[in-house]
Image 1 (cartoon, helix red, strand yellow):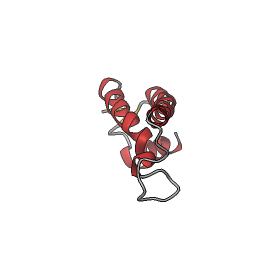
Image 2 (tube, helix red, strand yellow):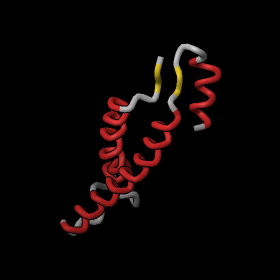
Image 3 (cartoon, helix red, strand yellow):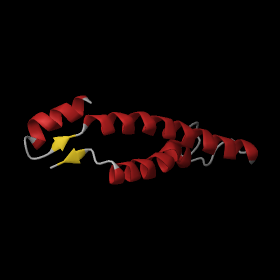
Length: 89
């Protein structure tokens, strides 16, 4: 929200108007979707009896473990912004 206020004040000016309610809803729902993505991949790993997806980053579960929540969250954010724009001219 702080970044939205800064962008509204200093970057966008009067050209673009930030819609704060959709931004708050997107942030809260995006957090929930991120957790669901992380838990989904953990569930897949448990069902396959696999501890880590790879060994590129030792002790961190591999590259897929670093971005498993993003795999769910990025499409959600894209669709949300498509149907509920956060910037209006």
